[in-house]
Amino acid sequence: MQLRQLGQSELKVSPVAMGCWPIAGITSINVTEQDSLATLQAAADAGINFFDTAYSYGYDGESERLIGRALGSRRDEIVIATKCGQHWGPGRERVRDGSPERIRQDCEESLRRLGTDRIDLYYLHAPDPDVPVEESAGALLELKNSGKVRAVGVSNFHAIEQYEAFHAVCPITANQPHYNMLQREIEEDRLPWCRDHNVAVCVYWPLMKGFLAGKLPRDHKWDPKDGRQKYPVFQGEEWTKTHDFLDRLRPIAERAGRTLAQLAIAWTIQQPGITAALCGAKRPDQIRETAVAMDWELTPEDLAEIEAAIAARGPLPSRPAL
Image 1 (cartoon, rainbow, N blue to C red):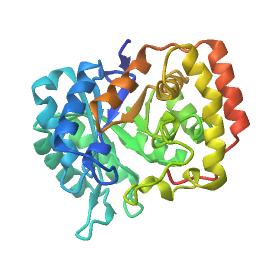
Image 2 (cartoon, rainbow, N blue to C red; image 1 turned 90 degrees about the vertical axis):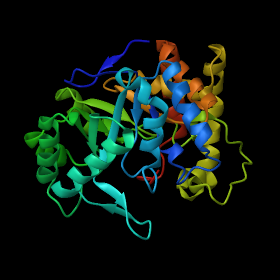
Image 3 (cartoon, rainbow, N blue to C red; image 1 turned 30 degrees about the horizontal axis):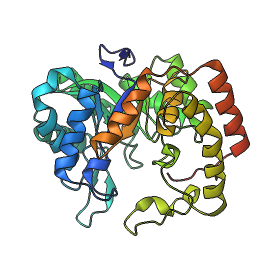
């Protein structure tokens, strides 16, 4: 496994990153502090040096605090990405605030939680509809110039105009959209834009919230606390079609002695323009499994077979909110 350069920065990252939303415990079930700390340590031991979190991962910064506790002694070995501009309101409602004042406030608090003097990659979590992206970009540029932030990124941008406006004020080092075998909308315009501007693309949901790992049986019974069941792909005909798709992929994984999760991640990080895939985990065995995907080079025959299965599956419902 070779580290990859993050855009035009000096940062080098593993192609599999640990996505640290699950350890926040907001939507994931059966999350424990002991497991979360062990998972972070297992990720670093498995060769993952890239950890992705956010100010709002946890109602009280749980994800950032856990990273600081688990990996503080290895700070110079890892790359930490976190995000600003989104927090939880008094009623635990999600609030977007991309104002310069809030961005500066989020940064100071994230530095304290993480127990560090710098954030390696700092994303605007999502554009604030009430604040011009140029203003948010200006605040992030100030933080970069101050040395508190080494590189700046954007997440959940959809319009090329947003990228252009932000980039004109503060150069974008990395972009974080969702992307996987069945959700490939970024290939139309955003991925080409990033490739043209030497912007790293670090994608979330490479396993489509766990579905592509192949561990949810057709007769799966949902825990009432599991938030995934509300999405269309986990319901009715879409549920059946995706299981049929997974059945077509299994022989490819089995030939190589790999799992479906490793197949889905290996495919993702081998797509042109993709720098890293964020893999969520809440137990050490999960992140150890996904880390193996960094060392699997799919053959042209494998890739052709996968593309045929994707075409047979057909598109997902329009813009599922996964």
